Image (cartoon, rainbow, N blue to C red; front, side):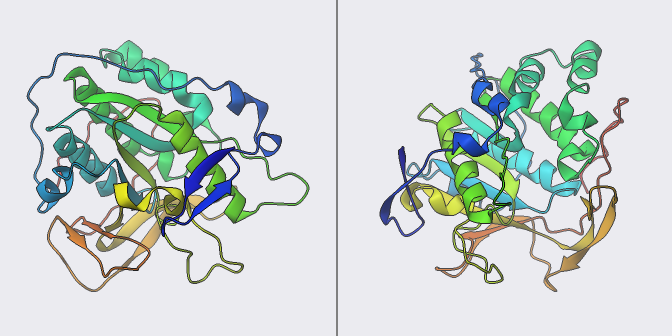
Length: 301
């Protein structure tokens, strides 16, 4: 059993991953490989307000919530990882299945050449039948960016933390799954290092969604409040790639907030589901599934 604290820091005992409801492969998934390299200068695209955030020595967990399937969110997340690594190396945690950790390690530790890319694209991340936004071209380009940061000594490891969750005869329980997701994240990041997390925007909330009946605590709500900040990736309309069923995936319309803040990090009102926002400052565009023949990434808008 592991003690994990909710967003209000009320101590309570919650179970570690319930291995009875998690596939046996997940128990055997190795921890992420740790990389060491000589620190080299890197070029980071600026994000207004990021310096204040990454210079906070008290922050261990920086959680970014996204709607999967946009081209722009993985780009700005990669920029945030770059900026956060200028003061000290970081760990990056991604919402990918834990059993794909060896494939991620192999690519992150590679030279990024054609053979390494071909090997990585045979991973389940890219070949699973239902390809949501986490199998996108943009997500592949994010892995390429993280590999470059690792080679420059900026990233210690890239951690896959989505457990293989089997709901069992009782059916899917959102609260149990969020608990398992949080426990997997905490247990798979063993080092005392700063962690940048990219996850779906509901998992990134620190309070129960208003629409959830019954109410449950999302993943970020289990992380220690004093050392965690959670940011909602926000945009001004556009499109994203998503699966509306097991057999239907495609571009969907992204709602607009009606405002157009610049590319920046801003803080929200205290007590809301997020501590702040990672503002993209642009309309988003749907990123289709990555194929076995990577295309060159378009330059940022």
